Image 1: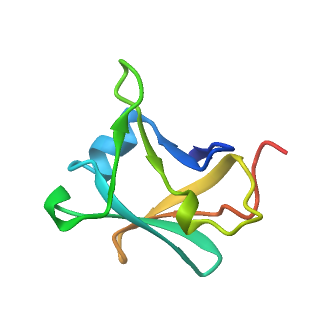
Image 2: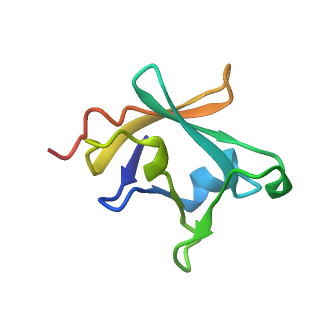
Length: 98
């Protein structure tokens, strides 16, 4: 799958991906192993980052710029769901649309 990170540091999640992996619309973001990891949390009461509905189709956006290095690139990036770690792993080092 491919996900977009905007120049303003927003991660864009299509509605199907958001519903399947982030049903509570809450997550945490961290850089690990040179990837951006997005982990769902089960309740917004736990804190974390809130996903916002972006459009009528139900796509979500979440501001992740604080977790990204200063020299991060915007664009479309390869991503995969890591079931063992319960995380969406995004290879933010290598945009696919360069």
